[in-house]
Image 1 (cartoon, helix red, strand yellow):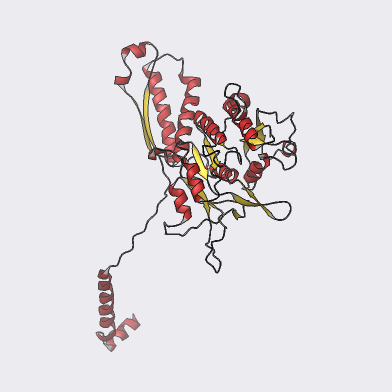
Image 2 (tube, helix red, strand yellow):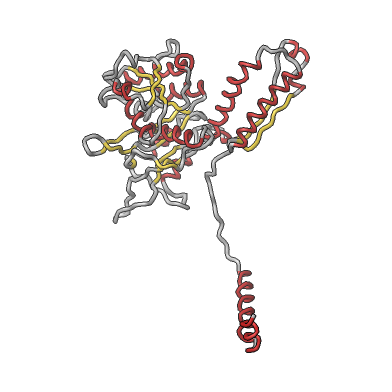
Length: 398
């Protein structure tokens, strides 16, 4: 995450440098100090879900204006400052972020154009094959839809609206929802043992409701939650609908609702499908290099590679992450000249499991069931009027 924390210990949280933080490191958390900035909002959202997590934090300088602070967050690709510091987190810290966010500063459009922080973080997400979570920042659905129109990446997940969170004064404050959505990704991953499931339809702890009411009706499509979802924007729905006497909806949504990325390709519409494919490709690249590369290119070695990849796919199928997958050697793509140069190409296919998003039940009448009623009547008529007293006596003695 890319955050501001103006009161943080500058010796630990060095500006524009990725820092690894575990949510149970109390002393390290204390070094963030006070409540200014956005860092603690993310940490509190994660901890509210009752989970432990590791967080890669990049602190940037909070300037006197929002625009100046946004420029610090965007940073420089050449100097790896701002959010670009996340790109070398793996080399620097040994871990790579899978969920990216820059709460508050990535929300809302700027001068009738795309938010620069969101645009830069989207680029980092594409590079890392990670999911960037953004608040639309819209005051209403129309503004949120305008924000949505600026995105087409499979690695972006939008959430609307902001949420209400309890504060230390005994009241509540309006906060970005992206830290809570990100926390639900982490929680779901831990619960299910991988990135293969959507965080949608899960109760979110730590929020009192939404900043504005979001209408939702089970079994209906004409409500704001569905309008947002159809535009690939996640939202929050209530566990139970609540309206006042005037028909106004309560802003009591606490269930994360939405499976979609902002991809323009419908094949990459579901966020768990995107994350599964990214995890699949990264694992293959990282796990085969240590033992497969630079060995003699023999038939036995090629068989070992294909068997290892097949076993990996079979494991994902058994875990419910893939519907199927297969591995093969395509002779047409491996000519004598390429093999002679030590180049080998192995083909595989796989199909991720989509979430059950649209469940429909069809209700019909069937008058043929009256045949059962008629048969039952006939049996009872025979039993009551067709038997004799002697038959009952024999039945009683037996």
